[in-house]
Amino acid sequence: MNITEIRPGIRYVGVNDRTTTRFEALWPLPAGVSYNAYLVVGEQVALIDTVESHFGDRLFENIRREIGDRPVDYLVINHMEPDHSSSIEALRLRYPAIRIVSNAKALQMVEGFYGIGTNTLEIKEGDTLDLGGPTLSFHMAPMVHWPETMVTWCPEQQTLFSGDAFGTFGALDGGIVDTQLDPDRYWDEMRRYYASIVGKYGAPVQKALQKVRGLDPAVICSTHGPVWQERTGEVLDLYDRLSRYEGEPGTVIAYGSMYGNTERMAESIARHLAAEGEKNIVVHNLTYTDPSFVLRDIFRYDTLVVGGPTYNGALFPPVAHLLEMLSARCIPQRRIACFGSFCWAGCAVRNLDEFAQRMKWQPLGTSVEMKQGFTDSADEACRTLAAAIAER
Image (cartoon, rainbow, N blue to C red; front, side, top):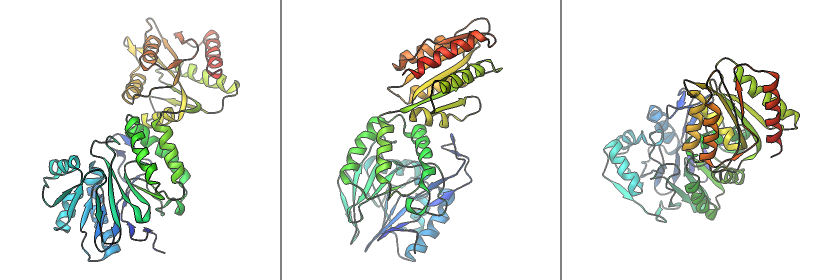
């Protein structure tokens, strides 16, 4: 069995990265990441995307293993972010006659990043490329999540090469297709990938989904994570929910605490929520939890309970940072409850309430503000807030 042959004439030549600690120098990679590239082989050969340049030698080894000394005739670029494009220069040296195929915006970026402006083929929406057997057609998907992004379709094999769309964090442990590995561990990493990187672009994702559903792919070949074959419907549905910002019932409690008093409020709210029968509760200490995991859960669940202390006449910085990230992602609807503490002059809760108003989120209950230490009366106020959250 050739595990790298995804469909007849379609071969996987991607690589795993288990050494990089942060994707885009921002998002942690506890389980690594894959950079996926694919060959489509007919009378001529097309390579769909490349890999991060540190792994270029592995890409070339994989290509040689699949097609021997045959030339690669075309490079199709779906997305120009350097984790997929930084091997282009080395590829051109390896295959001097290779023709670079993409849209005008991507080809401008090829020249801007790598100084390559010759032997290119500019394509537009719906254009096709005949490889002598398999054909490829091209469909624009701008702002998913860069302006030059597109997807490539092979109708003979009902296979979509989707760029970063439908991607996940996490390296591929042995298998490549979802039928060859346990795909369940990738769902949360798909949510985290989407929330961190694509989350601002819900409307463009919805437009791209309409095109993709119209093609009705049997196989989705993303540039990160598993190749989706058995569970393409679940992948499309998850992206649909994420890009409509549709949260399932559940509560994210995200807090910052300097000396533990605000933390006790968070724990109290969580306990009282559980006593009200709530089960989907996730608690994050923003000083220690990477924001990508918090964003993942906020995209998943419909309610955010956020709290923090006043700090230097403003909101505690880790909490303020989370609010900035949420604002940047333009999430249009969530339920929200707020809590906070202060020593001598409070402003944290006021800032949190103002954030809720700016976002036009639905407030739940009355925000709880605690002066100095945690007391029985503060616990009772947290219980009341938890009851209001549970009534949603």
